Length: 329
Ligand SMILES: Cc1ncc(C[n+]2csc(CCOP(=O)(O)OP(=O)(O)O)c2C)c(N)n1
Ligand SMILES: [Mg+2]
Image (cartoon, rainbow, N blue to C red; front, side, top):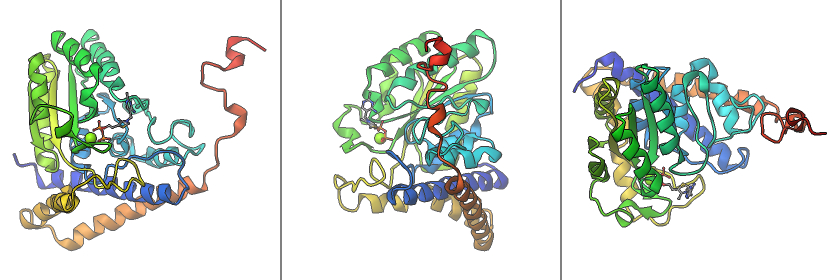
C-alpha cells in the first residue's frame, strides 16, 4: 500500500511528537519531578500513531499503561499541554492531576482511560463496542493491549463475546517482545500471538508494527470490517520498547545487541528515509518539523512546570467517599 506524501508527512509528524513527548517525560521522571511509575513507548510510535490516525473522534479508544502516544494523538491539539500536566500530577492536568500517567482519560475524544489492571480494558471495551451495536452507530472501539496481557483470562472472555455478537472491536496487540522481563516466547506457545484468535474464529494477522504504512493499512481493514458489522479483529503489531519496562529499569534481561538491532528498525528513521528517497522531501524540511515539534513540546513542559499542584481541599471531590454527596457529616 502507498499512502500519499501528505498523509505520510502527517503521520511522520505524529511520530516525532510522541518521541519528543516521551523524551521529555523520561527526563523529568528520572530527575524526580514526575511522581510515580512511568512506562515509555519510545520505539513503538508507528503502532500508536498509525492506529490513531485511522480513527475518528467518536470512535472509542482504550489506551494501555504504555499509552502516552495514543493519548496525546487522540486529544485535541489545544488539550495536549494538559495531558503532559496530568502526567506531572498538576491541577491543570486533563484529569485535575488525579490520574497521572496511567489513568488519563479524555471523554471528549472518547479516550476511555486505563486503570492499572492488565486485561481489564479488554473487557470494559466490550461495553462501548456493544453500545455502538445497540445504538446503530458506526463507531468502533479500539483496545490496546500488550503481549503479556494476552495471558489474562479476561482476553478469552472478551473475545468469545465480541466474536459471538460480532461487535465492532479491534484488539491492537502491541508485541514489544517483553512483559516486564519475560520474553513473549517464554509465556505463550504460539509462534505468532495473532494465531491465538483463531480459537474464536476472529480474523487476525501479525504485522510489522514499525512500518506505519503497514499499520495504517491493517487497521483500516479491521475498521472497515467492524463498521460493516462483521465483528472483531486482532492485529499483532511487532515492535520493541527501547527503554526498560518502566523509566529507570536497566533492562538487564535483554540479550546484548537486541536493542541496537531494533534501533536499526526505528519507525521514525524508516519513515524519514521513505520521505526523502521516495517523495523527495529534503532533510532540511524534516529538520524543521523536528524543531517545530520540540518547541511545541517545550510549551507543554513549561505549562506543566509552572502549574500548581492540586490542593488538598478538594481531595474528596469526584470520589465515592465524598461525604457531602452521601449526606454524612
Ligand atoms: C492483572 C495485573 N497483573 C499484573 C500487573 C503488573 N504489570 C504491569 S505491566 C505488566 C506487563 C505487561 O506486559 P505487556 O502486556 O506485554 O505490556 P508492555 O508492558 O510490554 O507494554 C505487568 C505484569 C498488572 N498491572 N495487572
Ligand atoms: Mg509487552
